[in-house]
Image (cartoon, rainbow, N blue to C red):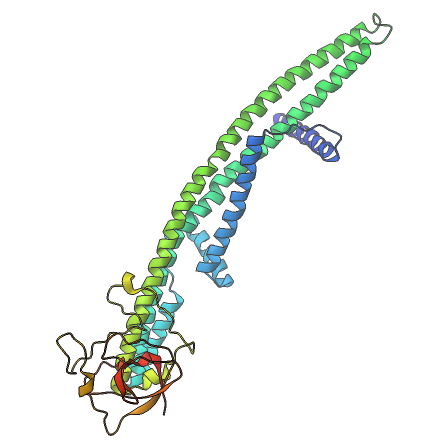
Length: 401
């Protein structure tokens, strides 16, 4: 008990003297030992790394978990599972939940009805999208968020602790310097007094006090130099942290690219299924109702080179099964005759350049006559403008009643 009390008293005294030194430095009444320029640059670089890493980490969490309430709940859940040393269960994504709702609704509406069967198709693809999202979230959390969190909660805490120790060693060093300065000033003042013989005992005490202060200064200088070296080595490790975070950033981008490519592929497949289903049930109704953007140029889709088997929406296949074709594979458009019924007017939404002689070039906002023939690809119609005739893609048209 006595030892603890003495230690507490000693620690309180050290804290008080450091506080006095720090206050005097702020007021400009005490000298302050400056760190070398290299160490100052390392400290500034480390602070910059910490601040931006923290911002990137927080914003990435918001990106992956946009709802603040869900985000807070997820962090609390992760905390409890971590303390219990158990694996965190995978969460159902919003896409998977929406898909399940659609499938359940289809059961009540009737799977055989057009609406029910479409709900089943869309619900299945929504579940796939949700599964892709869940995989993306898990991959991003492991490969990107976890390394950033480990730096903030591990390496940075160690660096901060050593920097606080360095600051305390610097304060102790400046306190010792101030004591040596005062002791030498007192010793010089006593030596200058006329009655030097009478003050010899006091001068001896002052000399001993100055020697003790100098010894304390040497010890403080050694401890400060040692702590500065430890801190410098830790701060130089920030370069390795940057290399590690760069690798994690590449992995995060790869995960994003894979996720968006999967979503694009699923949506292309879903559009094809819906287009095929609607053309069988309501010919051309889906194409006329699904109006794309009214801009004069068809927007360029994501390159299909990265998605095997997926065709861009604005460049659908030009093959026309069931229609007479030349050996080169081109449609004999002159053999196609306009039916007496079933033709209608259409407004062109985008400019379109024919790829071969079987197709008809289009200009935005012009009106043409269109119709279909048996066995023709549902993504294409036969269009006529005066004496010109050729295949045209339905995605470039707005069918008029």
